[in-house]
Image (cartoon, rainbow, N blue to C red):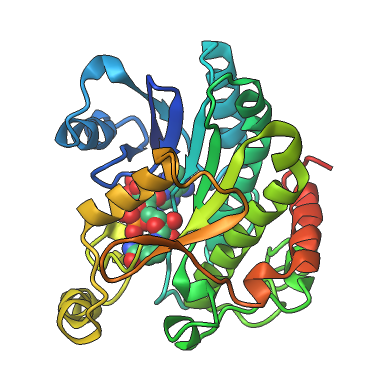
Length: 318
Ligand SMILES: NC(=O)c1ccc[n+]([C@@H]2O[C@H](COP(=O)([O-])OP(=O)(O)OC[C@H]3O[C@@H](n4cnc5c(N)ncnc54)[C@H](OP(=O)(O)O)[C@@H]3O)[C@@H](O)[C@H]2O)c1
């Protein structure tokens, strides 16, 4: 990012009252730098390529790397008077080659600040809107990852996710009076992403424990598969970006297309058979969904509770 240029993210809210943030082909979003209109059009293009007609979506500004932006987005959404039936938290940043940490507007390490704290505040502020919706199958969904699960082969590729005793999170992840990493260790961009995904999966379970019974909302996370062609890998070295898709396709045989991943996400959002709350969905080789096991850390209730409480303080809710 160039100095003085503030990224501005755009999200899309469709008329069936679900809201999501992403720019993959199934869901739309985009970004804008300063007021360059051309970048805003990214969201428009994504909606168009997904075949959404103009009256069925609204594009709204949201930068998850700024808590102010999250609050402004929520205010605008609430003022719009629209009900909220489903909230999908799909955005993520991944900085596998970063040598130095980057930071959100409030000074949190960027990956955990965006992927976890941004989504945490968004979900918390919109929870009441979900509760108030009279839609019979209300859902709050977050995209997790196999890479945060150390009970899998992929989750054992170093650096492994590990939240430790949360001392870095407790200190604010700012690199000044605390580490930029949740476990208090040295900055590692790939690990920060994996740690953020563990937080995402733990957060959904904590939402489930706190609010499912009283609200009937389905809280779930998912691993849509390895979608080696998405923008997530934009900061990886060019050779990796070139070789990773064929490696996944022909050697690992774990390649999932963006279309297929979008269908999987759509299933978790709207399929009547996937309404179980507090679970983590995955798909087998035949693209059949199943409830997957999380790693011990990604299902640690005590850690989930502590992350919830620390995150509340960091985002100004406690
Ligand atoms: N690709 C995979 O193999 C894989 C595997 C497991 C899980 N996932 C998860 O799937 C989800 C979607 O990732 P993807 O693979 O589709 O990658 P992607 O194409 O890069 O999508 C990520 C989205 O997040 C948005 N975003 C980034 N920073 C943001 C911010 N500060 N505010 C608002 N939006 C922001 C990006 O917007 P811009 O493009 O406009 O910057 C982009 O639309 C992520 O949660 C990821 O962790 C992906």
